Length: 191
Ligand code: AMP
Image (tube, rainbow, N blue to C red; front, side):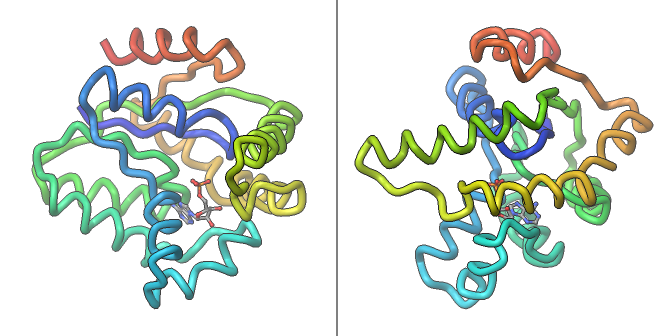
C-alpha cells in the first residue's frame, strides 16, 4: 500500500509517518528529511537549497522529483508513505508517473485537517522543545519562516486536495484530535 500524508506544516505528517513505519513496516519518504540530509552532508544540491529552505520557500520541482525518483528506483517493493511530497501539481503528476514506472500505484491520500492557529503554536512549541532537550531547532521553525511556509502551502499545495478528491483517493482525518486518535483514524482509513 502506498499513501500520501497531506497537510500544512505542523499538521503532524512526520509523527504519523513514523507511527506507520513502526506498526506497518512501511517506508517513509520525506523530501524535507532528504533535503536536510543533503544540507548537512554539504552536497552541492544541499548548499543550493539551504537558503530557500530557511526562508520557508519551496525548492524546485526538479530537485524533489529527482530525490523521490532515486528512492523509488532503489526500493521497488512499495509500501511507501510520502511525507511532504508532492507539494505542487507538477510533483503530483510526476509521482503518478514514477509509481507507474516501478509498477506501483497510489492507494490513499490522507489529508490532515487542522487550523492555522494550532499550527503556529505547534511549530513554535516544537522549536522550544528541541532547544529544551539540548538540541537545535529547525532553522525554519520560527514565526517568520512559518508564515512563508503557510503561504507556500496555500498557494501551491492546497490545490492537491481538489486534485486527489477528483481522483477518488482523498480521505480526511481530524489532525487536531489526540495523537493516538489520529493514529487509529488513519488505520481505519487504510484498512
Ligand atoms: P518539511 O520537513 O516537509 O516541512 O520540509 C522542509 C522544507 O524543505 C520546506 O519548507 C521546503 O523548503 C523543502 N521541501 C520539502 N519537501 C518539498 C517538496 N516536496 N517540494 C518543495 N520543497 C520541499
